[in-house]
Image 1 (cartoon, rainbow over the protein chains, first blue to last red):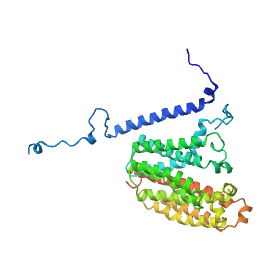
Image 2: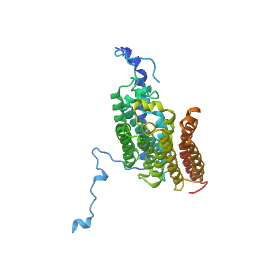
Image 3: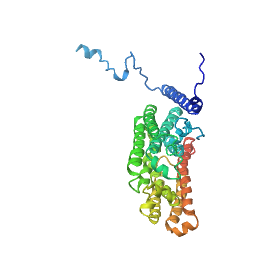
Image 4: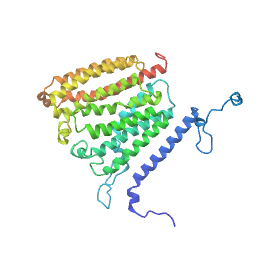
Length: 68
Length: 312
């Protein structure tokens, strides 16, 4: 069954809904743009799932310290 | 922005997207965007255009959030004043609770996003600005003291400081002086307006200086704040962000401002009434150009430095 307009609310609120939709698309575009800009600047990128995070990994001790 | 559609169930006007935009006080936002942009562009160092764009956008959004919170709390007095009774909340197009929710949501989003885009010093300053405008000014002091304009001016003075912090991650003398310029400019600007818009504030029982201390005292305070404003404006000219364009502009603009403020101070009510408050209106109109040209001059000096015309 095709989706059809069932209520006058749809037409009445079309402008408002369109505005919200465009705002959300713009927000997503800005977050995407910021991400690209940060990567290009060489900001440290860390994943939070199933990967070691450099910022919280303890420093690796040197071999000479291990032996003594 | 609102068309004639109404909510069929309640008979109240239906809010359109433009009404929600009006909640964010777009005209105030334009000053915020401009001063924050100057703060960002004159700061030493730099950010990529995308990050700079995002920073200005989220600073503007934060300013809009505080505007929505202001409209939520001030709906009762906005309904009384002619100038504000057409706003979305007093006119019934947007519910007060909606304005509050939008204000809080946009505050959180703008601060978090500015922090992620730039740094947490800038985000902290933005959070403090929203808190200062919404709580300290709107809720606490606006209806309590005739110095409300001075206090509210502080909130409007933060954007260049936030723009600066977005690049440098710190607060410095230059950004404090840019703050001082807007802070000292606000009282003479708004009190000049209050002198020829007298009935509005009186009816809303907002303790404007004109009502609590009289119009002669307001004229004197305009003159005092103008005298304090000039050294701050010239002080900016002695910092690293200014150059010959700013210094020349500051000397001329402050001389004109002082002449006009002096004229307002020396007038009596009868003279003002007779010529329709022409001197007060002249000072108010000039004060708009005054701020725009000071920050424009800073931008011009910065551009000339970048192009190597002077300085490095």
